[in-house]
Length: 478
Image 1 (tube, helix red, strand yellow):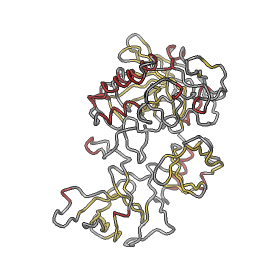
Image 2: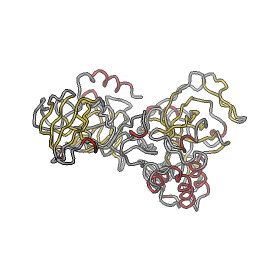
Image 3: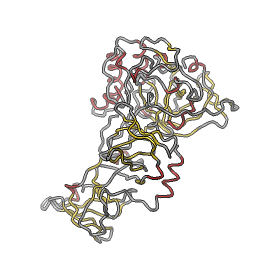
Image 4: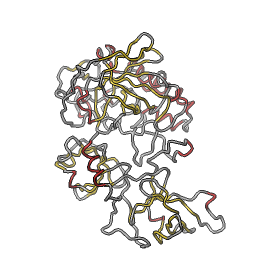
């Protein structure tokens, strides 16, 4: 995904540290301090209207506080356009990324302070047993931007101290933690669930300062202006694959495969693949009453028009181990409209592996690509589920529905917070919300309950995927 950018990053990585906001970086044992620009992935630093922003490899544009403010179309890295999150207007055009400074990622595994000096220092607070109760002095661990332990932060009760290396040699003196910004975790240590950082559990992909949960990734942007991309040939030879209770899954020889995770959304917007000229098979758009709109150029509900997502495209249950659904794929895969993929869940979750995720092990969800999102990452499939969160854009005001829950993650994310992350309570909570929110819309309620029942209220389950021949069950609704 976005290969040219990774080549640029690789070429520059030996020369770049996380950038300092000041003109000069302090040397070792220098008293001066600068706030770091902290990103969770390699990013560009760009100035738009005299204000600095970062553009991540996933196309997310943030201000220096880490707030998501826009999306960048990275189709042409020499001519990037940035769209504002609020109204999809163009913030900037014609950006040539080769002329921009590159910022490397900073790995943070739990709440920490970040100092930009001769290099980036990630300072973790002292644990209780590393604090002298009599004097208030403490010793915290310090890592570099890559997460490697490089020393300690020794400080007094006023939270002023020094960074020393592993041999107790001073690196930076007079570090005042009260002047540094604290950052939430953007990395979870996979080897130990107890090492997961303090985090807010709500809302889909964001390894940013936004905490990781069953929905921590920003959702698909179906109404964003996007580049046309032709689909690859669908004439590849196919072979029989898995068999799920009398249903034969036919895998595509040479088709795409990999691993990733499933998020969820339902924004009611007109899908990307419902516009003409997007490559691959066109899907349909519908009005708020569910009637098909034949004009492929009809304006999306999310832009004040009447064309939106068809409720006939809710998930379909075949049996206990097989289901079908519509999904958004990464923006870099814009030509994959109408392609299908078999997601086989492995019983784990991207951010947590509790009983809901474990219960999915071995289940197959076959999805068809009807939308793209420049904020959807490689290996991620953003499943269309009513009540799954509206994400960036919201066209659902046209429907007689109740509140849709958290912007990212929807009703399930709301249940997570309400039930204090007690996974055993998610399903009953979500079932109740689906019945209430969609009380006047049986079709939408059926789609919402798919997440509660067939998916057992599992957030962000991980999977292995393979490209497959599209089943008729999906083509009939496409």
